[in-house]
Length: 426
Image 1 (cartoon, one colour):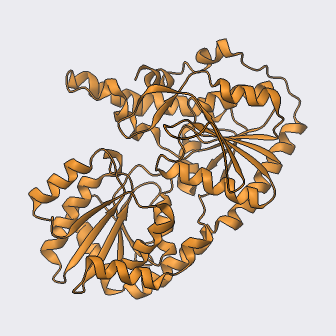
Image 2 (cartoon, rainbow, N blue to C red; image 1 turned 135 degrees about the vertical axis):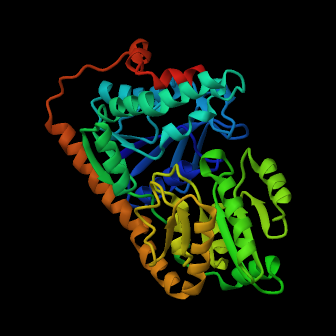
Image 3 (cartoon, rainbow, N blue to C red; image 1 turned 45 degrees about the vertical axis):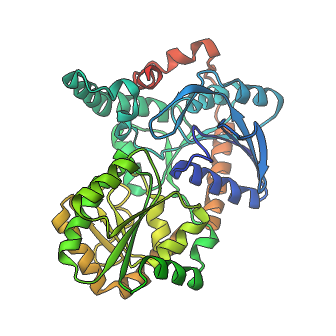
C-alpha cells in the first residue's frame, strides 16, 4: 500500500503525536508499505527527507506559533495537494482534525480515497493556547468563550469531522465510548500507540549510572515525563511531592523529564515550596533514552487529565515501573488499582498515600507492569493496523461514490462549524 500520513506537528517538535506518527510509519515500512508523512516545516529542517524508510515532505506554516511551540499550518497546503496531483495513494491517514484534517477530507473526496483519522487529542483541553483566550483582561468573557468552546463548539466540530471520515481510530476503549456518545457514527476501532522493541530491553549499566548520579547515597527515585504545560497538570505533581516529602522517611528524588513554557515558573515554585532538594528538571531527553530513566525509577508519577492514551504510561510499564496517576481518560484503561499501580482523585494527600502504598509492594507491581506493557508491542499493532487499512480500502471500493468533493474555495465553508474559526483567529 502507498499511505499518506498527515500531521500538524512532527519532530523536531517533542510530543505524543509526533512519536505516534513516526512509530506507526516505521512499522508499516517494515511490513513493506510505502509511507509518506506530510508534516510542518521547522527552522533548520529540509523540505524533503528520508529517514529509516519514511519519506517526509514538509508544508508551509504561519509566522505565529502556539505558546507550547506548536505551529499553525497554512490554510491551503499546496505542498500536499501538488504531491497528490503527481502520485497515486491508496489511503490517507490524518492525525489531526483541523488544518491537515480538512486537506485530508478534500483529497479523499477528490481522489475517492478512504480517510482514516486517529483521535489523539482532547482539543477541549487545549483551548487556553489560543492567543485571544490568553489575555488577562475581560476575564468573564474569556471564561464564557472557554466554556462555549469546550462544551459546544469543540464537540460539535469533532462530531462533524469524524463523521466525514471512513474510519476513526481511538487509542483506548474509553475514548471510543466518548466519541460514540458525542455522535460519531462511522466505523471505529481501538489502536493504541505501540512501543518499539527497544523499550522492552534492559540497560543495567546505564540505569546504575543514573541512580548513582541522582542518589549517590541511596534512596528512592521517582520519575515523570511529559511537556511542562498547563494541560499536563504539573502544579498538582508539585503539591503531591511536597506532601510526599512530609510523609516519606527515606531520601528520594523526583526527575521531571521534558520541557515546556512553564519550566521557569515551576522551578521557582519548587524553590518556594522548599522542595528544590528533591526535584530535578532534566529538560528534553531523546526518546530512545527515556526508558533508562524509567527503569531506574521506583514509581512513575502522573497527573495529566487531558490524555487520550498517555504513551508515557505504556512506556513506564514496559520499563517495569508501577504508576500512581490522577484518575482521568487515558489512565482508566491502563492503570489497574492494586495491580500495576493506582488511580486517585486529584487530592495531594490521597495521591501521596498511594505512592507510599505502591512502595510496599513494588516488586509485584513491577512484574504486573511488564505484563500490561506486553500488549503494546508496535510490531503486532502494525499488523492489526495494516488489516484495518485493507478493510477500509475494500469497503470504500465497494460503495458507490455519490458524494462530490470540495473545491479549495469551499473548504473554509465546510469548516464553519465554529471551532476552526477559533483556531484561525489565534
